[in-house]
Length: 118
Length: 117
Image (tube, rainbow over all chains, first blue to last red; front, side, top):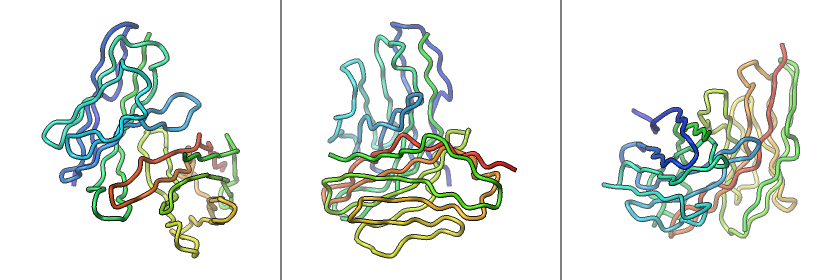
């Protein structure tokens, strides 16, 4: 079956512009995660969705970052007024429902979007 | 709070030899898993091996095995018979699980492994 897909694969933008990054999770996966991978850093968690709600937004670095998920499927990460420090690879992952199961559900990753802010 | 530390930014190994990547962690979760992910230049994160923290037996997947020392909070990855295709970034990570849901993965900064012919 199809895996997690992300678009665009690469995005180059100018400082101060807004960007939208898209994630299509695996069908049936109700949990969705966004991570950021900066140069020389590991992956850092940004936000987690369970269905359309985001119970954990603790990783969003500033109020310029927001995300939404509609129909329990596609998610969009929006960065407003981009800064050079936003340059990174943004990875999305999805998993089966994480609630009520008391077990770990494997996260499957997309190929990421490489964002370059000039 | 959860932290994962990988102290080896880069490593290299001769083809067919064995290499061990180190990882230590700290967590406040009672129930958690530990993982090693591989990230080749394609950027695709690939799960290599997982270890349930409540299991004492070390996980093994073909040429990959772990040495899990729970009291020491250590979780190293051993790659046997290294192959050129093993060249990649390797990330150690940890996540908790509860009835209310899984916690996000917490990653180390990675170890860049080069397998030399």
